[in-house]
Figure 1 (cartoon, rainbow, N blue to C red):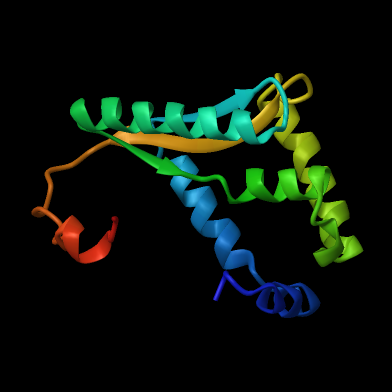
Figure 2 (cartoon, rainbow, N blue to C red):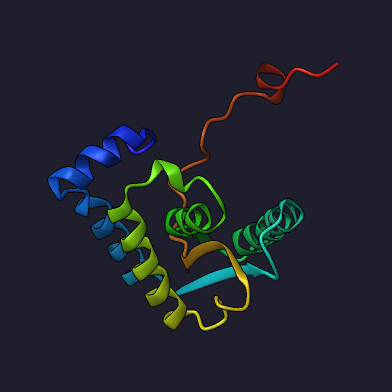
Length: 144
């Protein structure tokens, strides 16, 4: 449902969508820590390097029985608002995002100097219910 912009348009018109906010709020409230990965500026190279850093963070967290959960939907919307793609947003959504980013900047004080890339929460992992089933790589990835 959340993949389609039309759904967001309808939710905005109806004044709905608060379930998404409540889920995020509950996730943050239950977190042991919340982190923000930033880079000096908005660029493809910085996003690539940030992705590499996230992968290293996730591997280290997993080795230490710590869960790392992305919470970056808002951060991605901020980037869209600031760096292109705003034409798909209503003026109401743009104004709300601008206000949210100001609040976000008060929580994470370096946002004004850096480009926020990836927001995440950390929490202690409970016992694993079992290994998740995965298909063999050969069934999914075709290379020649």
